[in-house]
Image: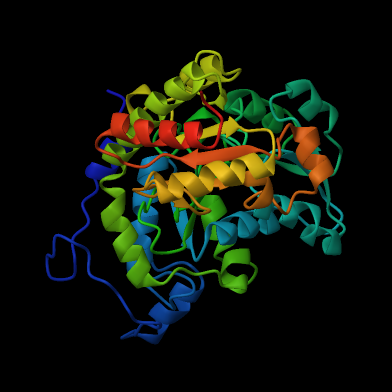
Amino acid sequence: MKSDPATRIQDLRQFGEFGDVNPSVCDSATFTFMQAKSMVDTFHGEAEGCFLYSRHWNPSNKYLADAMAAMEGTESAWVTGSGMGAITTTILHLISCGDHIISSITTYGGTFAFLANYLKKFRVEVSFVDITDLKAVEAAMRPNTRLIYTETMTNPLLQISDIPALAAIANKNGIKLVVDNTFTPMIVSPASLGAHVVVYSLTKFVNGKNDCVAGAICSSHEFINSMIDVNDGTAMLLGPVLDPFRSSSILKNIHTLHIRMKQHSHNAAYLAEKFTAAGLRTIYPGLPSHPGHALLKSMMNEQFGFGGMIAIDLETAENAAALMEDMELNDVGYLAVSLGYFKTLFSNSGKSTSSEVPEDIQRKMGLSEGLVRYSVGLDNDIERSWLKIEQSLKKTGFLK
């Protein structure tokens, strides 16, 4: 019987040092050895279960990494101090000077800036394509292409990447497919669909409380071990390590992720239908009218729904600001960046999380200056929340 991501996490047997039901927090930077040979073996990666230095492995980080690997169905994982730490470490580990990358043009603004601006110093070129156009992906391939980068559900336009098809293109060309699954934990399992590396900002849905910044890289034993090799591993040498106290708190929160994702999805689906019925241009993959609806259904673990992210288009940044300010005063949620919080968060993507993307490219990718992105919260009475949004829409003139 095929297990789902939540069940794989539940099946983990992770005790604390003294039989604690919560694994002990290890706040040690370094670890002692009773025999010198054991230290040598650990440096060489040949001492199973031994810890050397917390920049490499820490028991608390290992517990969280194991839980992420279980959720994703990968052999291994490694946790980082931020989502960007996970993304940049992965990409830098896969490339050399003069290489080429194919990326979705629609992607998180920080990722876009790293790919478009930062990698220039290494003479790495990036071709940004419409990731839903598989012919464009194939046409962008070069002899020096090393990876295809995309997000399962792109930020902020909520396009759906065809992971099996992209994996087939990557495999045909002997390169890696790296997928950011931050928007769709548990909903989609990219590794099971052929992705070679799955990255996360744990800050968002996985942790769910917006009280820390963290990331994860999920992949094969071979890839993770090469990344943390003491001699040339990008993660080991650049040091984007996560604090073990934060690992411990995220590990507790991950055990409720399946419940939270169902509620986020339920609430978002309700609001998407209301926005649509009100005549607003609404982007939500759970709507049959969404271009990626059928594709997402074919890839997803349906019990977790279509996710908690919605976007509506109010055409101008001024319109977006007026609505968001009134919704905050009306206690709909908060005008804030980020997502996956228990309260609803909303922001104007072009002026916030996608502001690193030049405006001409924003228009090219189809990002309206009036796009409002919602991360729908865990509201117990979503009908009441809609009535508040409806009041704000009427007050600001978007509804009669």
